[in-house]
Length: 157
Image: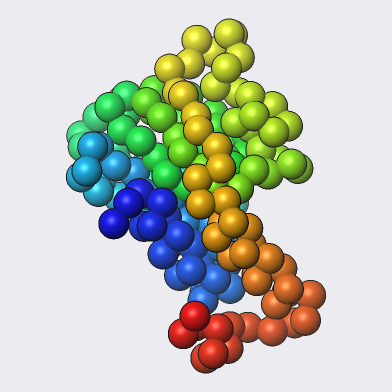
């Protein structure tokens, strides 16, 4: 499985839990360090974004807050908080699927990793599996507009 396959699987878990369907996985080469998805609603924690959970647990698991040899795959462009955490962890690279024109900070609204004030080492790549990432988000917002939770038929997709 590729990194984005895992991130998408995590995003689907979030969808089933009625969380905004963002999934992420932190990898070092082919090694999966940590995979997670948004858990803000269930943890009542505004920082429980998929990226933040992966960075926290990844640092814990590796025993080092410096994640320069790691890549984070995520279904949605990181927000300011997550992009800041990536820069502060010296993450090597982030690969995301869908841009976020409202809060995205890896090229859309702002490019935090490229700001020379931070001397960041984090590179980013956009658009991997964009169509699938977009479909996941659209399904979530369609349900929200209709006031629905996940149906059995949708979970089997």
